[in-house]
Image (tube, rainbow, N blue to C red):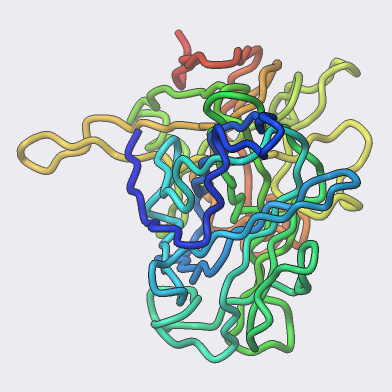
Length: 345
């Protein structure tokens, strides 16, 4: 796993071993936070991160604020450079009193599309990037103009010892370009979840070149984007989902567009080509990181670029979308890597 520390946190409160005059002490845990991503179908997704705030859950109302950049400005992170288990560190080894907390991450909103704040690079243009949420956390927050808030309302525990968390962005599901906003993209607040590294596992494997070729032949189009989709529980290709206990795999879409008997993916991973010394593709690899323990199914498509998370995409839509292969019964355990290849046999 690649980790790059970005922080020198002048506002961090170092409380380990501190006590009052009565000899009491505060038990603390080490808090670290990184960011990672499930890839989207654009060239770059750059967020200008400003501040991380922890708000204590309970009556004491303690709040801890950390500037991401040493100067108190912003630190730009291209999320597409940190996919799979790769993580960019925003906060490193800060001592926090043990207990339950809520988390806010503040970013710089930019609707105009400038390369020194937050933006999306489509390959042909630099376009603006914002999040619609704003406001403070416990009275502490970025009050500057054009500041957006990524708020995690589910409390989490900081225990004694090391606590390593990752804010995992699912851009396949939550990066959208709403109609009427011109060249501005938005990150939905639901596009990011907080995961504890000690409580998750991962799935990785290879994809046979022949499977990719067969999918491209069936698609009969000159543009392809190969990805592996992750589904919760038992799911299969629509033609194989005749068992009522097994859901049919569909694309990323709005929750209200998922019918009974269908399963929409919860994450996706890019198929990364491997090449020999002559530049010939010899195979493909994928990795789905930060997966909660449980049972899953996998789907493969070469038309991920046609998957619009705001609508239901099928063979009949324009452009068309389909899933070409599936792998069922993948079990994930905490701290372990589950290996599943396409095909598995």
